[in-house]
Length: 193
Image (tube, rainbow, N blue to C red; front, side, top):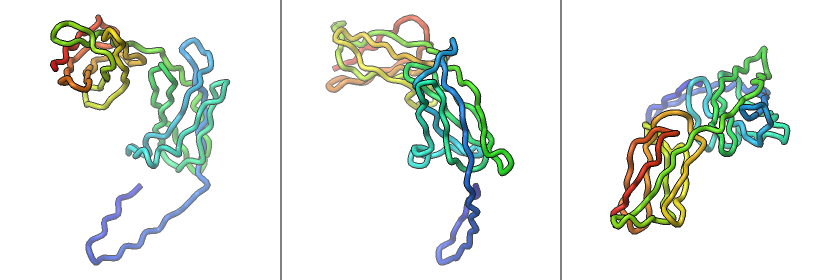
């Protein structure tokens, strides 16, 4: 992938070589080896991230036995994200070249992961129902989210070990956030009106 810069009023000639592409195959399984109904999708090419508009069509759902086949795909070093509901996603690298048109990833064993739990409440300690609670990586992207129950309790699951910003918001209340460790003790978030 090369960047082409065009100056105002300038002309550029670019040669594109199209190929039949390649394929990535594999199997999504639980930590104990059982098949999972999951998905595999391309999230990067040659070290560059991909927008959802481009990456969206480069995805495949796993069959009931957990196997998947992605393709046709562009040649190069592909970053593949393998995921399943309530499991920690896994990223793997697959190299597709002119010589090796199919990359076999083998089994991607996905852990159930850790969770963050706690309670969202107001100044009078009354639980707030329907608050959106998000677990965000320290860089700010939302990793997982949940909604608080009638009594304000929440559980955000399928998290990899580490620290996350836990942010709560609800209509009619100010937002609140704090830093917490996945798998740690329950946290409390007070939302002012």
